[in-house]
Length: 185
Image 1: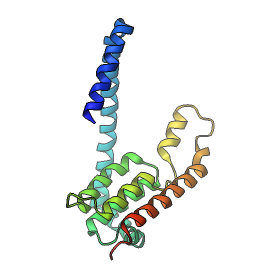
Image 2 (image 1 turned 45 degrees about the horizontal axis):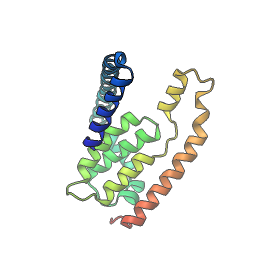
Image 3 (image 1 turned 120 degrees about the horizontal axis):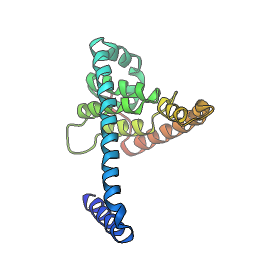
Image 4 (image 1 turned 180 degrees about the vertical axis):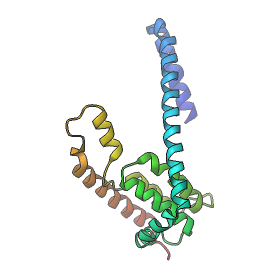
């Protein structure tokens, strides 16, 4: 993949150099500045959510959430450690609230707990699918983006979003069951 990106970048810069040489430097500088701004923004958001997750862990909120989601998680993930189930529960709660940035750190921690070998386990595959297709009750990130861009009714997407994410989640879980079979308890 590195080769593809390298070749694409070299071709784009070469094309710009011959097509409009005055713009090459300004495009490179502007793109670099935009990349840094995005990276720092994401870093700030991830630091905020990691702090919130640490507070939730210390207050034992994660354990309580894990207990509430235990029947669903046992069905979906089977025999995984309690720590993994806590991270998975936190990930699912973040996805239900539509806060994708908050879901990422807990998903990474859950994968570290479930994946010990080289081959992707059934629990890891299920976590990936549920995280990618997760049902969103309130897509807060999208509603916030729509509001910031001047939408007159940014929450109009609630029902279509709920239906779309529910269908993709059910289909994704069914595919994992078809490929890996049922979880061992």
